[in-house]
Image (cartoon, rainbow, N blue to C red; front, side, top):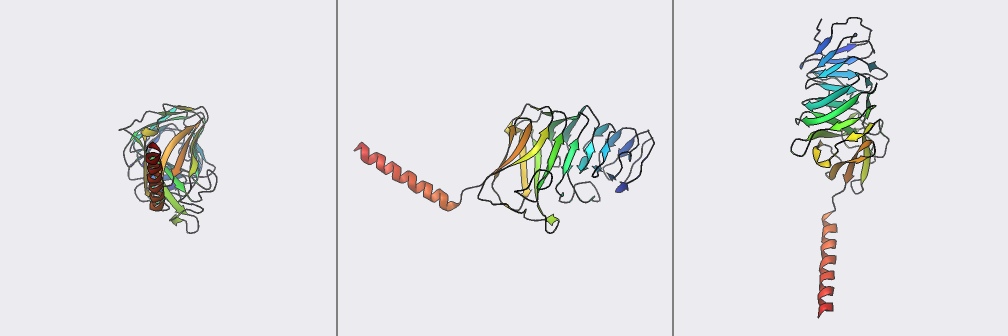
Length: 261
């Protein structure tokens, strides 16, 4: 049995086993670990796991969104590619898809030994990353994707995986500047943690969309640190810094020429 829903919160346990289809015009918030019965779930819309919820249903992700503060434990490997999107945290379910509004900070977990593959995504797919407190910790100050298994990266330069940055104002619970962010200093935030490692990492396999990050227009990059992916911020030097650097180089050049004479 296939069931299609639109913007539905499921807080009770269900026992059906025929499977669930969440269409591209539907969104579900699962507030019970048995909310979707025992069958498989096909997601082309939005599915959010609420705090304390663990969904063990097999998942087929066909361009939809997996979001929330809970845990997905389908086991095996799940590939994120095309228009598929992962959105740790999130506070609201929009009309057409989970994740249409600025997502609140949270941790989204893939448990039960589940592994992920980051493939080539469209500009609408990939991974959301929100920062509400630049000096905070993973899962509360900024988003975290936690994977109990491994992460394999098949995206490449020219066929990248998108990371969408959001600044989230904790005082208003809306889009806005994150707290404790200094655009003149560097940062390194835990982006993805894995239990058994990362394969085929390349920094050129990622496109970082910072159009919704209002704090600063510095340079962002992704790096690997052991079993984790890190998101790094490097400030862009002020024009006065470049001017001083240029003056120093000119002075050094003049000194070298004098010595040669």
